[in-house]
Length: 252
Image 1: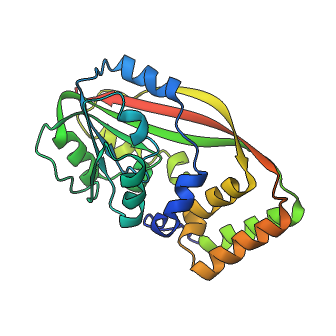
Image 2: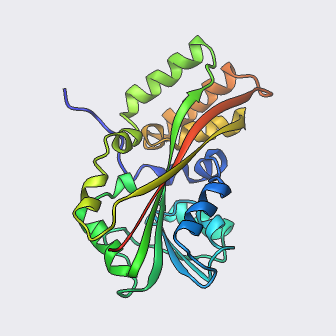
């Protein structure tokens, strides 16, 4: 049987939950990448598939100009509220409305697997200046706190209803292929492991923002959230552990 995946455009109806529940990116890992690439404060950069600006907000204090491309209106609305200093642009990765050689680096955090195509990579190459950089961030879950047998069954049923989330696209390494065919140097990488502690409501928001659940009808999403509130005490703190990885390369 063919694998059923959640759609790549699932996140708009969960934009507020995405902002509330998704973890921030580790500043120490971003600082290392910026240092390795020798990107100074005068640099102009693009955050591609910026979502609600989870990475954008860390780029703005570092660089002279930050353009945040996000195709979904609801996600971009949150981004504009949270990171007003960034230049929010409605566009797709396959059609970036910037001139050739416009930016020193392109960043993509928790998004590249949705548009890892020859067309999108060609656009990244086009907008980069000579020897410009491309940086990718992903969170790989290492450990989730078990919330009880009944809660786990509700979660399992929600994922079965909604299809596999985008993590499978990351783990497959298919995203590497269009990069290997482009004029980039070999990828380099660094990682950190970190713990993330959420309130119950933050954890529920995070679950609602997962593509498998985000694209489901509102009545199903609301029923899922309500059942989680019944099963998880309001004062419960939920622990998660991630391996956060940064990959980066330059135009050869």
